Image (cartoon, rainbow, N blue to C red):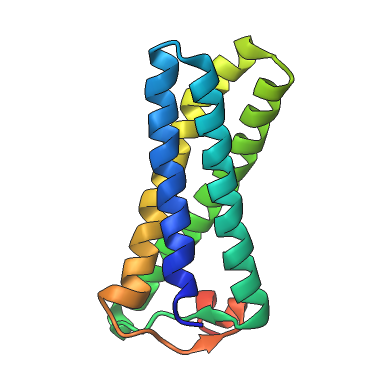
Length: 151
C-alpha cells in the first residue's frame, strides 16, 4: 500500500495547519471556533497515528534507501523526530485534557508550548517522509528495529 505514507504525512501536516489556525482563533478570542479547530487537529493527528501504526504492524517500516554515508545522520534525525513526536503527543493529550476539564489557566500555559512542539513534529515528520520517499529511492520494507537501526 504505497499511498499510506503519503496519506499519513498529509494528516500530520493538516494537523499542524489546524493548530496554527486554532492559535489565530484564540488570539482573536473566537473560543468556540478555536475549540472545534483544535479538536479537528487532534482527530487529524489520531488518523495519522492509526494509519502509521497499522502500516507498521501489518506491512512494516521503510528503511532509508539513500547513500550509506548519510544513513547515520538520517538515523539520528529519525530518533530525534520519534522522541519529539512522542513528547508532542503526550503534551497534546495533557493540553486537550486541561481544556476539556475547563482548567483554562493551565491550558493557556501548556497550549503554546504544545503547539510549538507539534509544529516541529510536523516539520521533521515531513522531512523524514521526503528522505524516505521523495529525495531518495525507498529502502526495503522491514521490521521497525531493522528499519530504524539497520539491524
